[in-house]
Amino acid sequence: MEEKLRYTDEELQEFKALINEKLAIARANYEELKAEAFRTNSNDTEDTSPTFKQMEDESVNVQIKEENARLASRQQKYIKDLEAALLRIENKTYGICRVTGKLIPKERLRLVPHATLSIEAKMQQNKR
Image 1 (cartoon, rainbow, N blue to C red):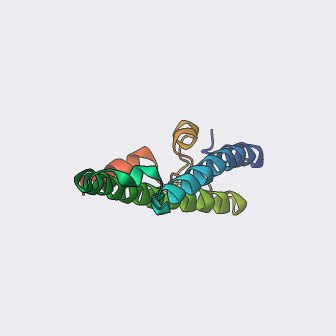
Image 2 (image 1 turned 30 degrees about the horizontal axis):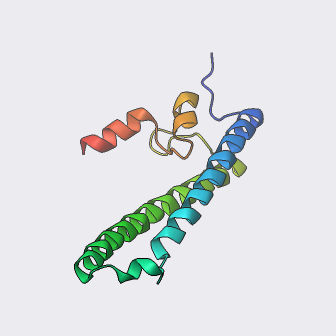
Image 3 (image 1 turned 60 degrees about the vertical axis):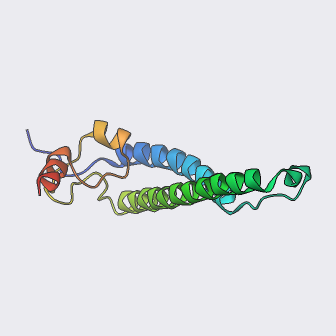
């Protein structure tokens, strides 16, 4: 039996739907994280607390904002990876390992739809 060189158009459409679903969720999460990272503190009745507590709260707020900014950055990279996967679907190169040239198993692509390496290639890369 001949080895398959690429996924069929029907299979690609299945992956496209999965990626678009994940992309919508990722974009919503990104907007939420971005909003949290850049939200400023309100000047309401809570500002009347003692100075020490304010400094402590401000320190925690800065840490939370930094963490949200870091998470937003990671989410943005994930979005770019998913968008790149959609381009590969349009080019009909989706699911082909960029190292081995073989098809990445469907199970892997369902879990990591933006994958460009097979497990075999990923393991070789990690050994270096």
